[in-house]
Amino acid sequence: MTTHTISAGLGLKPQHFDAALGCGQAGLWFEVHPENYLMDGGPRLAWLQAIRERHPLALHGVSLSLAGPDAPDADHLRRLAQLVGRMEPVLVSEHLAWSRLDGHYLPDLLPVPRTNETLLRVAANISRTQDVLKRRIALENPSHYLHMEQHAWSEPEFLQELVRRTGCALLVDVNNVHVSASNLGIEAHAYLDQLPAADILEIHLAGHSADASLPGLLVDSHDAPVAPAVWQLYRYLVTRIGPRPTLIERDGNVPAFDELLQERAIAADMLASAAQAQEELPA
Image: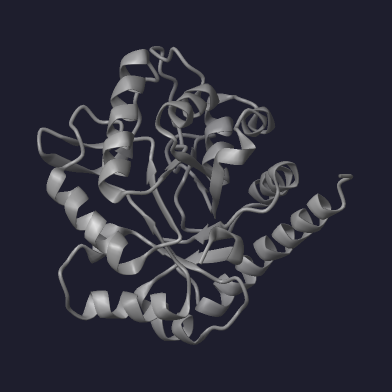
């Protein structure tokens, strides 16, 4: 199974297990956080295996802390490699962020200054992860809420250099691009234009919300439908790079499965249009 057989997918929620298992829509796939399945057996793994037998599956990690000062936890990597071997996911991804310090985990994906020192550290951690997993991973762009004066690289340049040094791929979260562009005053389309099309293996779409206490600040909340501005950016991106496996993320105010399928259908239609446009380009 390859990424070319999948189109638009959904983040998998336990309350949708029966509906997900029985859904036969073409190109549908599901993504989970592997941290919820790093055990040796039991009903949770059996549940995921049942889904995997019916649908392509992707793993989207949130705790490797690739940008942190500590190397990825060896036991965590070992258990992740076991899960990858068991489930044979079509995609494995992580974040350009940190969440671990001195053996303590923090419940967030925290930013780092894009310095040369950070570049070396993140590249080493990505390479170590790929060596253990024996496969390429995709790195997701973060959402930003404040300016950091220490940056020596733009984010697109930093991501490109990580791809060049490690052979990793990119996961482009379009909602994160929109949120960061709004909060920091950058131009979202120009950001997307700088990303290397050939190295983008996956796209994420999600909803955001306005911060209750800081007027004008957007939060990557994953608790609402994809906003019109994010759909517009998504269409712009896939028109430029061609279709890529695209995930609808919903982690709060999770609606019924059928409602998520309706949102997924919007992405699938845009992917089909992008594919047709690519086919019509002159040879």
